[in-house]
Amino acid sequence: MKVPQNVLSAGCGMFAPFVSNLTPERLEQALNESTKPVELTPGYTPNEFCKLAKMSKQTLWNWEHSGKIRLSRVGRIVRVPRSEVERILKGE
Image 1 (cartoon, rainbow, N blue to C red):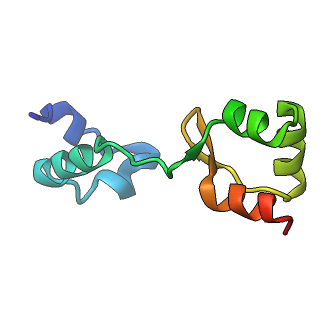
Image 2 (image 1 turned 135 degrees about the vertical axis):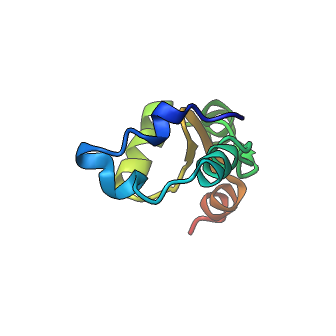
């Protein structure tokens, strides 16, 4: 990926500390690293979990808010980790 020179020379204002030592190579490396695909934790969608646990989605969100269950989130994607499902089904 070719980085435009005006992006590198825009080291003024509040971003100056961040771009003052920025080289085209470092910017390209950072852009390449930030676009790698993210692996999701294997688990269930909220709908799948709610069917399995025979509960409403609102109950699931309430449980998350109160700390009874931990959900994995990547962007807008939400998953109920299998470890949490096992813990809930064991009654812990």
